[in-house]
Image (cartoon, rainbow, N blue to C red; front, side):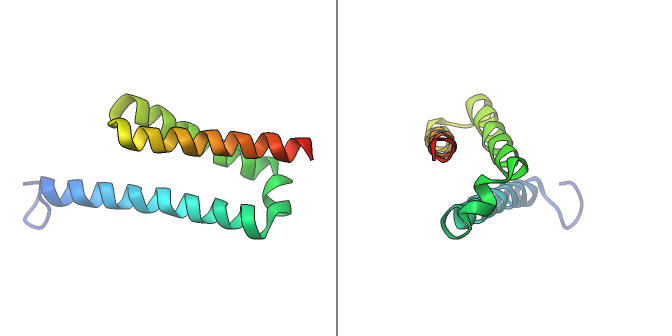
Length: 91
């Protein structure tokens, strides 16, 4: 028990829920930009670097701490992201 209101279980659930929401928000924002505002995303080195850094961070965390299913999902997402960068550069 951390406090009367907070237990390890509640902290664990809150941690996982908040981090899952962050991953979902990342996917929704970058997916929306890629589909609806392609020029904004692919002409912004900053946004492209942020996306790559985020997925790279998920990749490192996944390799080190997660089990195979989420890590496989992150690998697929990273591969798709890198492929989209390559295809955008070839346009």
